[in-house]
Length: 57
Image 1 (cartoon, one colour):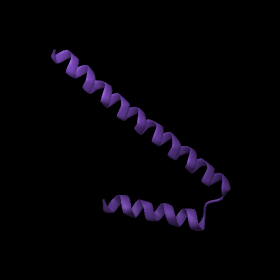
Image 2: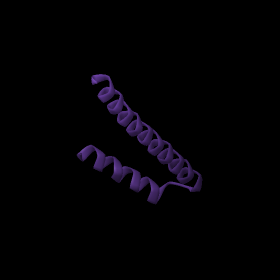
Image 3: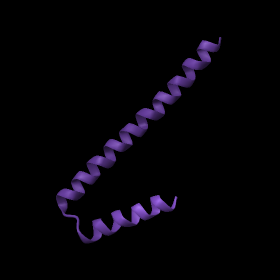
C-alpha cells in the first residue's frame, strides 16, 4: 500500500512539474489501455466461473 501511495505521489509531482501536453495524452492512453485489460480480465474470470459450474454438473 505504501509503495502504491509513493508511486502516486511521484506521478502527481511529475504531472504538476514536468509533464507537457503530449505526456498527458500518452498517460491517458495508457490508463485507458490498462482499464480495458482489467475489464477483459474480469469478464474472463466470470466466464471461467460459469464454465467451471457447468463442468461440475
